[in-house]
Length: 285
Length: 337
Image 1 (cartoon, rainbow over the protein chains, first blue to last red):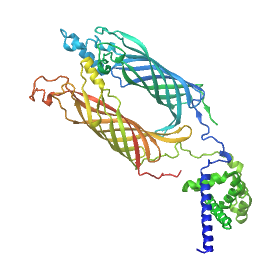
Image 2: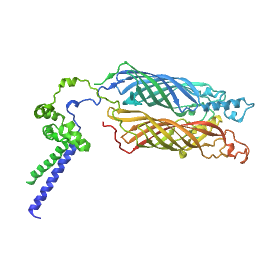
Image 3: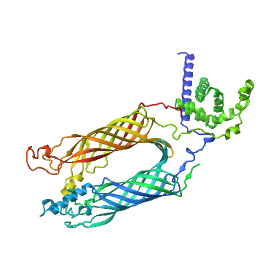
Image 4: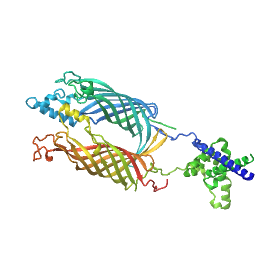
């Protein structure tokens, strides 16, 4: 290889290396944050944003309906109280009492059979076998949720608007909440000898509670809310002896004990009317 | 060593050449853009913006000067329209000389029509929607009916679609422990039903459309729809009263359905779907009494005619979570933005 050719090769290599280095540098520069200058520099993403929640109290009378109940449905009447520190974070509580308890079709079927057995002359085999589980009126031994108080933290990460039939426009938000639920229960009292012993007792169950909801703002100071809530805890919904004996305590032991409480993922749907105080919301820059 | 300066010069030229060409969007602004790059390079603002945007994609190249060149254009071109440019026009053709009172024009009320929804994010009209998902029963505390779902809709208008859907329940029916506990504790048997499949012809109407800002950072669009239709469900009782003699076959039932759904768009052709739908059918339940006559005679325990009891209008409420793909993937708006 001649000296000229060697020089030419070196030149080409150095040019290519330098060009590659420069292009590589340019690629890094492209990844820099875009710095706006001019009138948009430092401007917020949205101007004149209606801050429906910031520094406002929320008082939301609500009616709630339990879902997927085995023996008895509950309709709660109550309210949710929140103070929104910011437009996306609030601290508050939901409180409600069981305004109505409605037995399910299964409960009615069980009671019909139970009543027929008791009305029949003599004591049938079924009646003997269920003496510790079925009282004179099955509906009166069903556990019920009497009240709930749930302090909770609410985050509102999503906010937006909704066009309905292209003629009604609503501000909306989607929120998530979590906290602890203190649930006042009435359920069958524990007993060692349980035939003809169907007294009820009250207790407080403490459970985690969480869920999500939508708010649809109908004016400056109120909104319609839909909310789904989970409150998982164990309770003896039917007042039956289902566990406590045998291997792993999974068979009846002819007693009503804490072992008879079955884990339930209790679910509630809530419809609310949210009122915000003060009545006037703030508007961002 | 002598070759290095030459190489560096060529490299600098290569580096500068693309940057200048990327910054160009309009021919008339080429000089201005070039000056902007040169004057603002030391601050690293304009140059980073222009080149960065330009390489992000073909579309961005056209937009890059608009953002990056604004201050420079203000400096460089701020005088030209009122200076030599307009003067030249007035000299050449006095009739074409702009004669506007700018203060008066600025005070004039604007009557521009602004639509509440300027352009829907994703148009549905004349597009197919393929949905796939998984559903879970919401109202049956005795037997779980999870199922995979498929649906195909065609949007006749932007808000109305016709389509079909189907579920396959058969391997997933779940007889819950709760049933055995009730049978053992109360000596009461509850008739149970399991499903094989369901299929329906549906109409979908989309009355609601909106968007959410997430964490003040990103925006996603969504719509809400109502759906209803008619179809069939294949169902059969689970033998709990007399399982020794009864072995039910699946029967096809007429089923009506109605529901609501929420669709969240990730882009213009892909969305997540959450739907709650009630499938209503007339269910034939297992007989609560078992014949004590052996054999398959008219009243025998083995005669299928003795196995069925009451009929009951049954609601199968299903919550479905899935994904939707719109085909074709792209579409044209009828009006410009």
